[in-house]
Length: 434
Ligand SMILES: [Zn+2]
Image 1 (tube, rainbow, N blue to C red):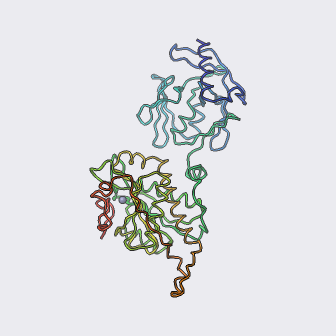
Image 2 (image 1 turned 135 degrees about the vertical axis):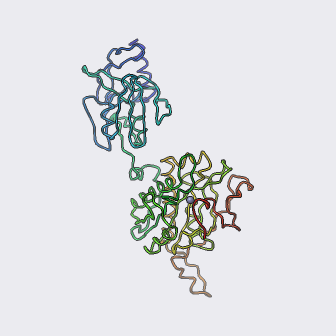
């Protein structure tokens, strides 16, 4: 038994950690015995490579350190749970432990290759279970560090040279420095710009509602992410709402007008009943507004580049918030809640972050274009044209590139056509046109 386990262990190390395994264990080894749930006894002790654990950049340690077993890092449950502020409940009759934090619920069965997350069974990475390790006469409950931490919405890193597993509690600011944000343009004089961000709906106005998900919650979450990114880049922002409260559409525009904002961006989710396959992003502007149109196109391009969302193009519509605002304004319909796949993405934190990054990128690009010196076109007959006002956008032709969908599907009856923009898709639940 021991021999077989050692062989398995060595194989798992090779598979899990790659060619550098021969130089393994920069932190040394620890001799511990793992509980064998099949035989109902401890296996013989084995030398397990030690792993350093950090939480939000600070080393964490207790009586029992992190170790590698079965090619995976196991961390003491108590250490991780306490560090992350998670609640732990023991269910000794079933050899189970329930961990809850925020909205997340993990049920681990010791010795089992699966766990339940929010009631759904999930396979553990490489089938390495939570287990008890006996070390110096004490039993310690050990959990797969990456699975455990990521399920609790943390970011996990691994440094091979120092055998360090780093757990960081996810924050949007952290993500700003992640690779996803790398393509964001450098803002020009961001502190001089005030951007009003409008999370669609709120309070008694839920917006669209599908699969127990309210549009108002998705829009607030995404809008807050946009704000965090813009603030981190130095922009000043105002939110029309920060909580789940009802807010009148005219008041939303009023906030931006009174503050003398440079830009107004409203964020929504779309719906097209009876068309579950229909998905993608639209950005709306007020009919005839050249600045709004340029902003909408810039947002549309950046969002689709960041998210991979189906590019439905820009549209004009007589929405209150883009009509009553006095600065360049646009309304983003991020995606369709009626499409199950798109709804799943819209609910996903990582996708929301990419959406927020795309929106932020569009805002930065639009504002940077305002700062850049306009090319001076000689026009002797019209001296005024040599000094364009900063408000005048460069002539931007919205791409009329057809999307992948055949033309018939491109404009479903729910979606306003160019000639008849009056009826936005989410009109019934969201945006009175007046
Ligand atoms: Zn809406």
